[in-house]
Amino acid sequence: QVQFVESGGGLVHPGGSLRLSCVTSGFAFSTYGMSWYRQAPGKERVLIAAINLGRGGDTKYVDSVKGRFTISRDNTKRVVFLQMDSLQSEDTAVYYCNAGFWTRQFTTWGPGPQVTVSL
Image (tube, rainbow, N blue to C red; front, top):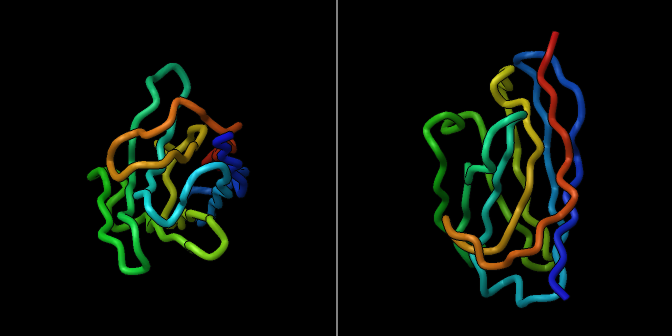
């Protein structure tokens, strides 16, 4: 059974940082690219970052987070991370991970941590 369990969200001031983690199970993690998505209030869920398979996997970001967010992975622990720096109010959303490099492989979604950027 494919599962994604995201954690690390919270409330942070503008300019602050958070690190999200996504622990996975139920599929061959090291053979998949991985992606992070987010869904802001009242909006569709959108893909924001992806990392290809392998320790030195290529990465890709949407323009709005490029230079501020960093995606990484630990194949041994089956975890994908999202380091978020210089957070802005526009980054307020629920964040999710899924398998696939810039594409979604599974219909399953995790609970998704809330990230709120506010004074």
